[in-house]
Figure 1 (cartoon, rainbow, N blue to C red):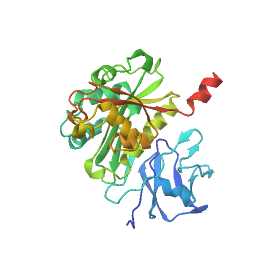
Figure 2: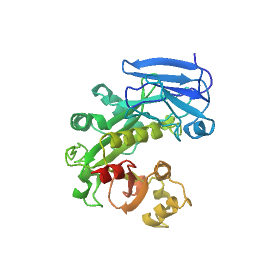
Figure 3: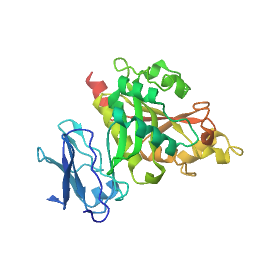
Length: 302
């Protein structure tokens, strides 16, 4: 059925889009995944980075309005479409909200993604869905298998110490600290990607989904405590601060932090004891921030 390396254009809304090349429809097929969601499977080999260079555009199938914004990210009638990401036929996926039926799949994913760390519990995941269902995302492949997940909550960031641990900020993982009324920041509690799907754009789709949530709720941005799993290998020869500094400067590569920097996050500081049981990071984490570019406009308008 599929040729080459097709990819999904995953959406966080009900606006179906089509990939175009130089203004003409690209060969492929539109399939219904849910009643409110359609995506086009294209048979061309292209990533988001190359799409703009090659002149790809997105067209809303409802309004026929075409957007050729950099990165092939379209905002139509206030709804943001997640950019297309190159996927192999084995791992092509879409991102959607997590549902109760996904709980067991997310736990299994966590065990694969973080084999030496405790996974989410069923109780914690149920609390996530109860407190902030919109903030819980999963990436599923074409067989319905969960290959990625992202958990988040809205917090009032100035109510926490900048060196606060993961347990404190997330209410011991139950998201009881979620504050949709006074909160102004989306807190990224966790992102996990199946080891077999890493490097295929799954993490980028999940981060794009988070940015869409922050924009939709008019939040100032996203804050997270980022793991630095590459640090343990050199912890005897340098401090965590020096390690992070070298990664930021591009002198070292860290599998998590280097990716987050590419996703537009800035490192604010290093947090000791953030996740004590995170042995590869020696318990350290980076306090990272992504600023919502629409926030300043909203603040000035207010």
